[in-house]
Image (tube, rainbow, N blue to C red):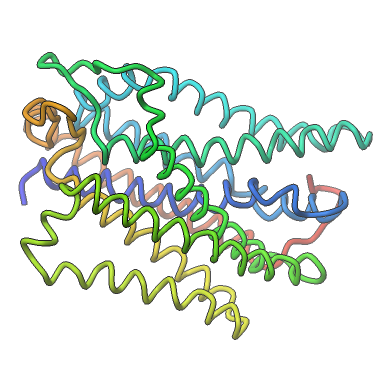
Length: 338
């Protein structure tokens, strides 16, 4: 357990936290247009209203951690994924604008326009994050100078797009469960039906993604072949996923949401364990891959940053817990609502 491995785990924890928190944000946005009428859509927005901007703190923290601990990885991804990153940032900003601007006017056309913008931006964010993950699994062409040798269009390969759709399906399932947990009445009952459809969508994408990974990215399963005990992780994930419709059926909404969170954490674990020790897998030219050792900062920098992380992470976690505790319970529409 050296500093390089510790920082690899810390980055993984931050990214998993972001995937859980902003994952349901994106899911609620992707499902937004399925809600009918102004009041239902306001309830959808207000279910995430107090927390969506705080959730993105985890993304900023993750980016800062990668920049500090693995600067070569940050530089390669920022330059190689330049257009994709800017498109992602634009979508995140446009999504925030849609949330804030929607209720500034009473006109129906105004609100419908921002509803569409919010939905499309949320879908695009989820797919783009999936495209990034898909390319990290598939591998990107890197030169000996650690520079990206491909183009923006090469990032939109079939496997990356498939991963993007899989991430979207996870977010939609996660978001639907969150809406069930946070609403009541007619919207609550409608969201229960969304959960069933989203689970079907997710299971289909999960199976296709797993088959594609085993066929076209065999390096992701090599470590599991070496240690058969590790297959308990995907088995546990399948059991957790199967528990979601069970908890929904028994109207244990929080337990269903908790199961969804655990499933996402296990997804991140499988991803991290599959690519380890690589941070950016080079395909072709495996020898040019960026690992946690050849792309990291100096041991002294990692040590100093670890002290800062041990101070800062509890603050971020405490802030997140306090916000969710303060705004717990069902959504109510009042004069302060979106």
